[in-house]
Image 1 (spheres, rainbow, N blue to C red):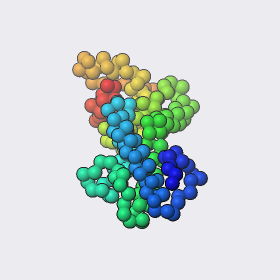
Image 2 (cartoon, rainbow, N blue to C red; image 1 turned 180 degrees about the horizontal axis):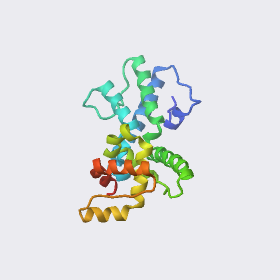
Image 3 (tube, rainbow, N blue to C red; image 1 turned 90 degrees about the vertical axis):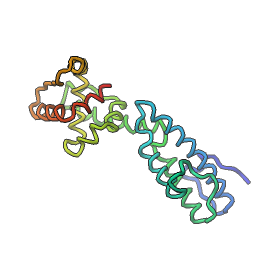
Image 4 (tube, rainbow, N blue to C red; image 1 turned 45 degrees about the vertical axis):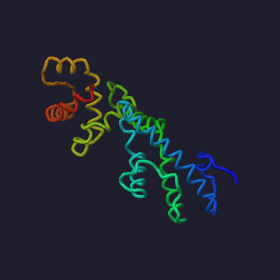
Amino acid sequence: MKGYSTKQILDPSFWMPDDRQELEKIYRTLAKSADQRLVRLKAYEHDPNFKTATKWAYARAMHDIERWSGAEATRFNTAPPTSDEKLISKIQDIKHFLEAPSSTKKGIIDIYKKKADSLNETMSKDNPDWKPLKWQDMAGYFESSLWKKTDSTYGSDVILQIINTVKSNKKKIKKDIEENRDIVIKVEDEVLQTTIDKVLEEYSDEVKELLQ
C-alpha cells in the first residue's frame, strides 16, 4: 500500500480515503509533521522577534492535544485512536494546525508583515512624517504588555502612532531614561499630544520595554 506525504494530504484536491489502514497512515504522517512544527515553534519563542511563536496555531494545537491526551501531554500522539470517529476528528484537528499560517516561521512573518504594510500605507497618506514600521515592530507591539494594557482604552492604531513617534525620538528618549528624567515627546497634533502625555505618564515602563 502506498504512503502519503504531508504536502499531498494538505493539497485541497486530496480525497480522504475510507479505508481504516489508509487513514491510520495519513494520521501518522500528519502527527509527525505537526510535532516537528511544534518543536520548531517552541524554539522560536526564544528569539526576540518571534515571541508570538507559541501563540495562535501553537496555542490551539496545545489545546487540542490536552483535549485528546490530557493536560500532561505536549505532543500529538502518533498512535492512531481506536475509534474511527476519533481518528477522523484528530486528522482534521492536525490538518487545521498544519494549514494555519502561524504554524511556520514564514507564516508568522507574513502575518505581521501584512499588518505592517497595511498600517504604513494608511498612515503615510495623511502623515508625511510617518516612519515605516517593520514587521518586527508589529510583533513586538502585539506581544508587549503595552498592547495588553492599552488596546481596550486607546485602540491599536492610536498606540501604534505613539510607537512610531517614540521610534522617531528614540535617541532623545534613551537619553532621558539614562539621565533618569521623565520621558517627554512633543508633536504638533494636539489630540495625539494629549494621548501621548497620558500614555507616557501611565505606562512609561511599558514604553521603555519596547525600546530595549
